Image (cartoon, rainbow, N blue to C red; front, side, top):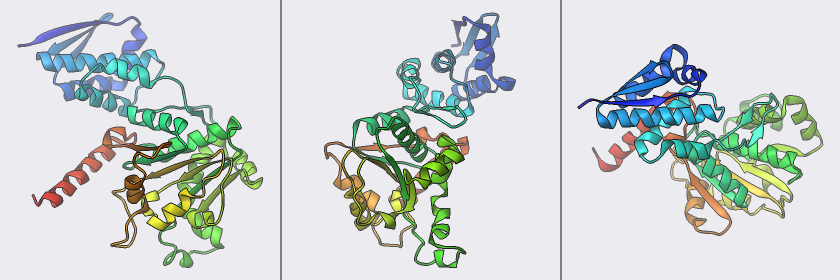
Length: 325
């Protein structure tokens, strides 16, 4: 039985944004929900089977919530709204909670905001806890948002230093063949951290703060033997730490400091048989007060839509191997 839903639209410009270039937003909703969406003046008509029409209506209302909050509609935001629709519940209400405030403003004046409820939960955990572990697949914004939070704390003078670090997993074998001094050898491993800082602060401001020692980007080995006070500290690619390295890093925590640890436990580059410090830390630190563990999944991916599909495909293959099917 076909059902027709009518949604009034207050402003004609909202319809233009909703439909998107060449109506691609609406076409995505129609294909995902199995309903038709038609524009009739200041109204939208949604036609389809009751369940399909209901899903399409909730997706449209969700996108209108984003538009009314001044959020630009992107392929990622449309896909995320459809994900929320599949989960059930009030999609518009969830999105309304998502669109409050920005985390940081980049050097170009662009606001940095959480794009998924998982990202919002991550940011709230960083604000409330001294140590936060962000675990999940590539493209979920773990590192980018952590750097944004670090820059925000630094600008507000909540901390006097930003320290960003990564393990250089291949240091024993490949770095020796690279030209230059030690810093130049490890820079390729730290490049994603530099890129995020450049975007948040601008190259000149970053260079100035790095020169005066307020910003440090260094391999994990540089952390040994130090106590890091009054600092915002980020350990990235933590799945490639050993258990000993992770313990060493976490115990560097000093007064008035925060630590964020990020990593993807499906992309461990350690030698076969060597346990990951991140996997171990998630088990050991579960339930410890003032330490939050946030898990991301493919729904939180904010890169190209194929990244979600790739993650799902690998997860299916892992399940098939585990169960022998």
